Length: 230
Image (cartoon, rainbow, N blue to C red):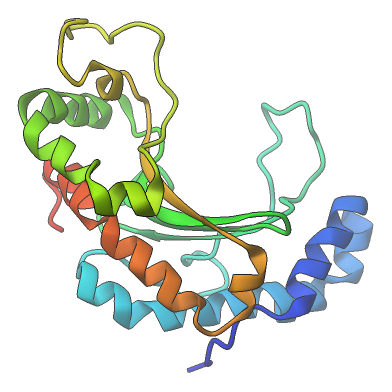
């Protein structure tokens, strides 16, 4: 088991250089460096978070494998993008629900870029059937939803709920619904912001754990809406 002592300085240096050299030749020349300064420290972070996550939810997976685990791939999907540069210029980790097979499942997320870091929980662009279940749950259990996504603890940590919204109410929902602004969302997530320097310290796992705990009521609501254990 590898100990997480914070991300190394070369983690951020690597991504700063990648921004200026986002091409396969440069990346191939720095592939070993990528493994040692990016992949392995992120895998150590995942390992450090594993026992902490179990205390929050036994159904969220912390998988430290370098390929196919909780650490996101660096390769971009450029099929539908105007930007054809092949690599992401940040690192990221997602701790997905055991029932989820991709990034569209409920989970906890950590984004680690050179100019910003943020972390929290939620669900990003779920498939239409799951999105409908969440919207119906918000409509039918508005009091529970509002308790989970507002209040002093939530607002202090996250500020507010995030997620792209439709301009009009989705089909089948009245514009007069008390929580129509949240029902119009296509994603639901709460993220705490931090400074990159914080990720260089071993105590970063404490910061992330605290944010995950504060998003737990929202995460439970989303999982309940989908019939998933939490």
